[in-house]
Amino acid sequence: MQVAIANGQQLICSNICKGPSCSLLGQQFATNVLLVPLGSCEMVRGVQWLSTLGPILWDFEELKMEFIYKGKRVVLRGVQKLAMNG
Image (cartoon, rainbow, N blue to C red; front, side, top):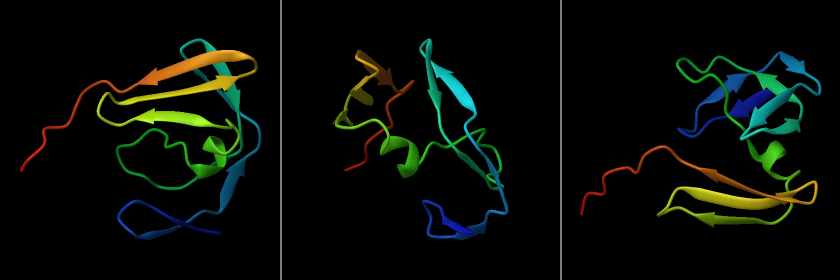
């Protein structure tokens, strides 16, 4: 399978891990993971994972996303803001 990454490059994915879980703020999330060489990134969650969350409230200025998962409100926050030029 080919996977498109943010810069438009296509990477080959020949392996998948079905159903591993990861913990974000103490909440366990399970999803399939495609294994592709990403260099310095440990893991990137993509559209397949986001589509399992239902409606998501995004605030890109505050680097925040909020959604309901298993009946609980989950708020994920970025660690730093990017400098804006212009």
